[in-house]
Amino acid sequence: MSLKEARTYGSIGAILSLLGGNIPRVGLLVTITGMIMILFAVKEISNEFKREDIFRSYLVALILRLGAFVVLIIAVLFGIGVAVFKGMPFRAMVEGFWALRHVIATFLVGALLAWILLLLGSYYLKKSYEEIAAESGVDVFKTTGSLYFLGAILMIVFGLGALLIFAGKILEIVAYLSLPERVENGEG
Image (cartoon, rainbow, N blue to C red; front, side, top):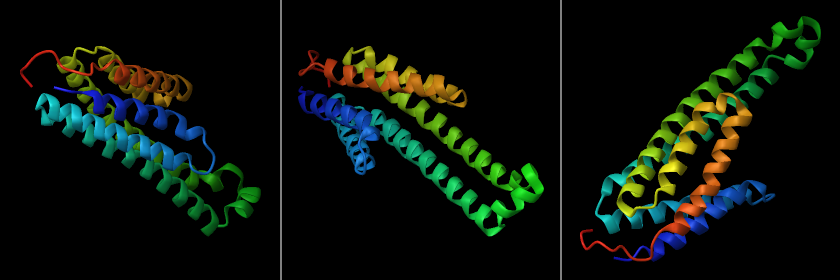
């Protein structure tokens, strides 16, 4: 069996998703393209090993992680809308901090919901990558999944969680490049 396409899609997709945030104007498009390429790679791996649960876990992870991003954007936009609607800039000058409590509460609730979705998505990503590691023999996938999951847990401590996720993204590139082109066992 051949994993050559999965190796190519996954490694290029992981590189694009890592670098996408650093590219002005089209960075989001580059990141989404990378995520879709990784999705294709996981589908190829799932097909090669005849394990649909690998792809299903990754798809759930992708949906939950995108959901976390959408929830965070909605919370920010809603918070800005509340601030403008209630005339916060003018009230804040008179009432001080208490005028901003509704806006802060909106941001905090949105951030908490986004964190919960990110945590659940990272758990499913970890599960998918552990299954890929077990089937392919590339243990770097297991480490990558663990770093994503620990990074999501520690996202509350922003710097540490983001640093672990960044390390996970780098290891994701290594994991896909470490995939063998062919699987030795004739069972898949």
